Amino acid sequence: MSYILRFLSLIVLILLSLSLVRYGLKNYGLAQPLSQYQTPLIARLSEKPRPILWTNSDPKKNSGTYGSYSVQFKEDHWILSRLEDEILLSDYKTDEENGIILLWPEINGPTLIPSLRSQLKESGLWKKVIFCSRNDGVLKDLRELEPQWSFCNGEIFLTKMLSLESVGLESLLKIKSDVFFIHLKNLPLQNKIHSLIKEAKRQGRFVIMGPVQEPIKEYEVDGWLLY
Image (cartoon, rainbow, N blue to C red; front, side):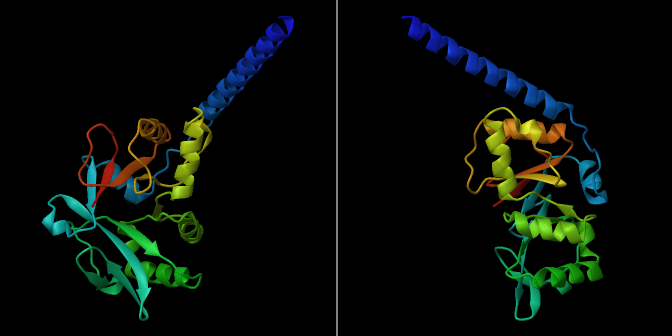
């Protein structure tokens, strides 16, 4: 009987120690200084009525939405594409109607990043672009070259946030991207997403979520990516 009591006491002591460690780490994360800096583009978006909607179909067919495009290198040209059509990146012009776009670069080699960067700088289009990708490496490489541009996070970062959220320590991970993007292609809607949104808001990040068929009222985000 004494062995059982000692064993139970040890288990209780271990659990108590783990709880204290978790409490200390959580408060350490919450106490870290936060940067409220936003790129001019994100600052401008933050002043607009929200939520803001993006779509990969024609924005003209979805009143009040902006465009979401993939961009890839084909036959010596950078091509913007969405569900219905393709257009040369050099021919694309933004205006109030199609406004600020989400751009999803498809990079298949290291030499393509300088090429895309050069074209976006020459056209000035980068001033109206939020760069998104499920590939953290592409975003990291672009951001190192052009830190003044506006970027989302990739899926690896989102996975880290989800892992820390599962033990209540999401505050330990600093969101360095300008936009916290919650990629839903491989992530079911669940209660832990509310915790991620709350933490991103605490860190002063602009939050976009999707793709979804239509905005979901239960999630208070700044923008949605629609099918």
